Length: 290
Image (tube, rainbow, N blue to C red; front, side, top):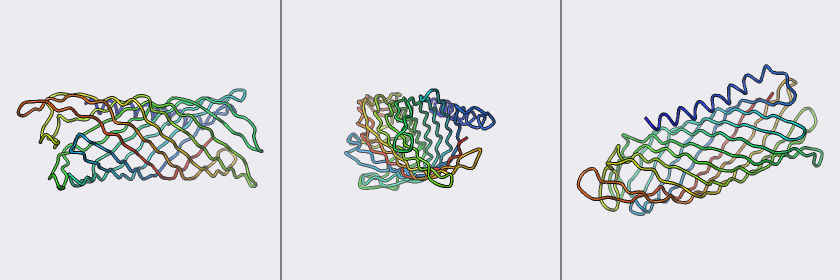
C-alpha cells in the first residue's frame, strides 16, 4: 500500500505537469513556453551488494516515458518545471543467484529549475540550478531466480525516493530554414535518498542463510553524483517547435546505512543495506514546444 501511494503521488505530480503543458497550448503568452513529449531509452543498473554474499548484480530495462515542460521567462530570468513518468520491464542477473525477467519498473521525476539567459556567440546560453525528486520502483515480488552458484533466490519489491540538486546550462542557436540546435549539459548532486526494500514479502538468501524479515525498515542514502546531457535538433513550425535528439543520464550513488531486520522464522537478526550502484540511461526524445 505504501509503495502504491508513493507511485500514485508521483504520478499525480507528473500528470499535473503534463496537464499544465497541454493547457498552455491554448494560451497566448510570449513569456511562457509549454511542452509535451515522449522518450525511449535503455536503463542499465549495476549494484554492488556486499550484504548478499558479496553479490554484484545487474538490471537491464527498456523503458518508455511521457514528459511535460513549462518555462516562465521574466526579464531574462526563467523558472522551469520538468516532469517525467517512465515504465518498463527488467531483466535481473547475478552470478550467485541466477537470473529472472519480466519484473515491472516505474520511474517518476519532477524538477524545478531557476536561471538566467544570456546572449552568446549568436545564440543564447541559459545556466540554471534547481531541485529534483526521483522515485524508482521495482515490483519483483513473486519472482524467483533460476539459480546461480548459491541456488534459487526470491526477489522482492523496492521503492527508492531521492532528492538532488541539478546544476547545468543549455545553449540554443538558430540555423537557416527555421532549424535550431540545443545542447544541454548538467551535473547532479544527490543529498538524500530513502530506500524501502520489502524484505517482509519473500524469503531472501543471504550469507547467513535464508530469511524472511518480520519488520519493516528503510535505508538512508546520503550522497551520490550524476550527470546528464542531450543534443536536440529543432524545427520551427510556426505556432510550435518540434525537437528530437539523443540523451544520456548517469548516476553513481554510495551505499546506504545499515538497518536491522528480525528473522521471521527462527531467531536472530540480520543487518542489511541498500547497495552502492551506478545507473545509465541512454535514449532519444521527441518533444513539441509552444
